[in-house]
Image (cartoon, rainbow, N blue to C red; front, side, top):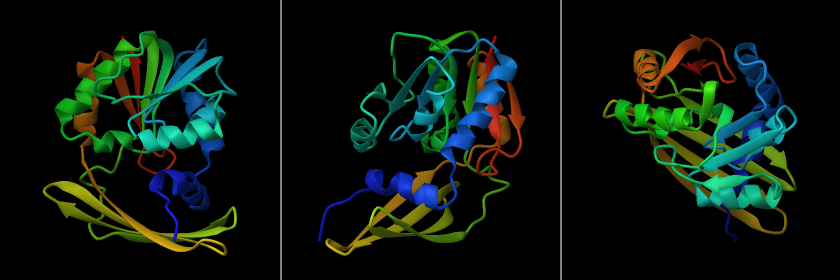
Length: 237
């Protein structure tokens, strides 16, 4: 038996599920440059272990990341010690510097509790942007698109390990409860099982747009996006 957590298996699992960080960074960079062609710096909020940042650094002269999870930061610093990763909460972080663009991927804003917290976070984004800067947010599902009872499962083989991930999503108090079971096995370390239970807010499209506008952005919603949930694009007025 051995000790392993979500931070360590997160990226291998999602790459195995088809998440293409390089392609996503290129897509987002193109959207940023359409609105701010001279953008040279980018901050990734809720950056996880820095997978998107590793691709963004090929597109921008200066990149940095903010992440709440100490475990994610620790894994990211081992994998890419050259990246600037700061532990911080998207509702309160203050880096003392500004960027041309801010991204927040992986539906991370869904971990905020209320529309008011969403607006507070976007005000933090605005405080870290240059005039005319661009903020791109990948949302979680809307109430109208969330599938109650949705089940998904994947098996990934990577680095001598076999990792299985099975999840179930359900409505709970107007939010989405996602329960995930991970099983990790390798020849020398045997089998390890752990679970994660996450409550994710189901903000409406209108609540996202209102939060952007309250924070001083002109906002638009672009359908599609990396996982079919679309992207919100805000340009700081």
